[in-house]
Amino acid sequence: MRFQKIPYYLRKSIDEIVQDARQNITIHYVTSRGQGGQNVNKDSTCCQITDHNDYSQYFFEPIKFEIPETKTIKCMDQRSAHQNGVIAIKRWEKSVKEFLEKPLKRE
Image (cartoon, rainbow, N blue to C red; front, side, top):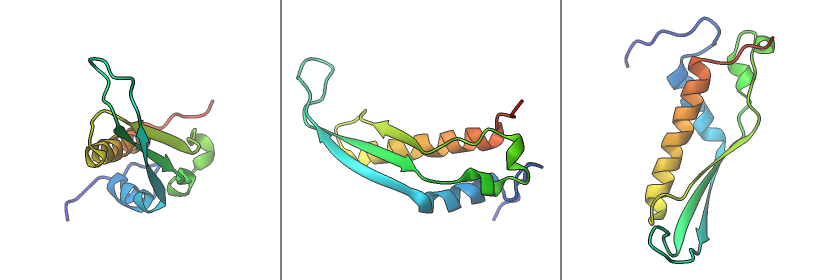
């Protein structure tokens, strides 16, 4: 286990929060049919991740920060459902880490 500095406004490290948050997301796969053409995949499978986490529980003073509501991340970059799922999970992790590293303060 590596040592990680915890920001003063968070109760846990960012990696621990992401691990906890993974338990409260839903992943849906939806098949979509393209029109054809040069850049459009036919019969591609879209991956959609819905984040149901309440991130205010990880802050010491959640009143001071803008906490995002339920958000949905979609990915339809690849033809494979698995590849789209991996890309969507990485996008979700990146967005959560960016929010936790630099949360917006309320005025």
